[in-house]
Length: 344
Image: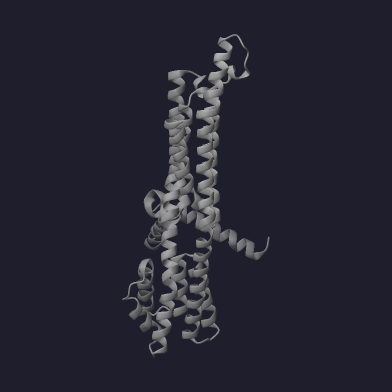
């Protein structure tokens, strides 16, 4: 064991003794130090993970829409278990395989699990679009004021009094930091982290690197504004071009439901009735043994499954995210359930 290891062991033993010693032995300074460390540890716990969720549940969920699954998935599982238990105790074990009430419980559980995530993801996408739409105007205005002879802090101070939609609070906080003599690049990097959108982080990184390299701030800001504008326009253009395919997916689902409704109401029902009459008249018919309820339930399962996954495909094609398609999945799943539950 070397001298360094011996010294480290001595420090560790001293620290262990100090942390576990009674308060009467510790000096006033050590007690204050321990109190401060305990406070820091407590604040770290309530700002991360489960502690943050318990302290600020709404903020924790809004930071990332997927966080709502912490609540919605256990709730959906609880509803599913409760519904299945009630059906089992009321109608018996056989009803779990033959009764449509089980399908109702499953659909309600799925909707409880995905609807909160779909709503929060929709709100988050709307917020991101508002931020990214305002970002080029912000950079362009700051560049214009800087060209007129204003310093960057003064330019941002003037811009902060304007309205930039959802980006306004972030701009005003950036102005506050720069008014406290925080360097422009550091304040801008914090601004990009707080905004948290890919476009903002990309633009801020571009400005920071160019500023550190000694480039003209106005030209850098204007280049970032043009880059952000083109990026946002390409994103919107892609979405507008893919709307037709999303419409095709929805229409295909509705056509599928219509075909199943016609098939069930005209073909299967008519053939089963004809088979029953033929059997009553003494003639054999394979259609006499057809269980219409079985086929109706099979078709309903097919319609609901197609509605759910068609929504995911529509979201991936139109918005580049399967999670964004959950709102379409919830709508089409509900339509399929209502159609087969009350009309077919």
